[in-house]
Image 1 (cartoon, rainbow, N blue to C red):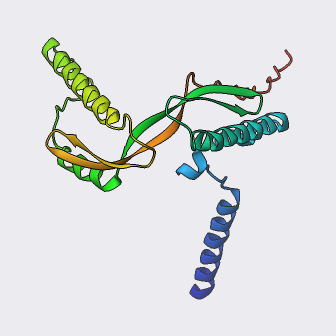
Image 2: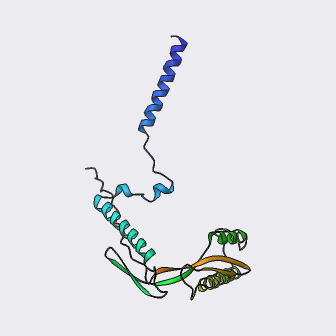
Length: 199
């Protein structure tokens, strides 16, 4: 046989094996964030899929109503939102929303502060006390920032002093539910029973 013929046959066989392997490989699920939220969705029955769509629509409607529930309402007024067959009671609360650039600068300055512990490391009583103290300080600062909007109007631009820094932001009125709305989970699909071989 001619050497060119041998080379042609070998390369053709390699290409055909590659093509067969590509045809037989199964597609793998997406690992990115776009594929994660629908994991197991293909295993749902049509009824479960319909229930899932209904729950999603109810949640979307609830969020839409919650955003506009406190428009032109006074702080502390009671509000009721109805989404689907659920009714959620709540009040209009006012909070401080910092400007993105102000918070970015503070985060970059405070990035290297704080205590670093190794994962799984046992903490001493002194370290636990330090963590509790830091948590209490952070909570007090947060409450002071949020109380800066007391007796302010919706959308008013203000500055809040945090330690020695000034944070620009605005006060905004939003819906605050009295209790977290309950959601009914979609029942999981059960694996089909396997047949046992006859003895």
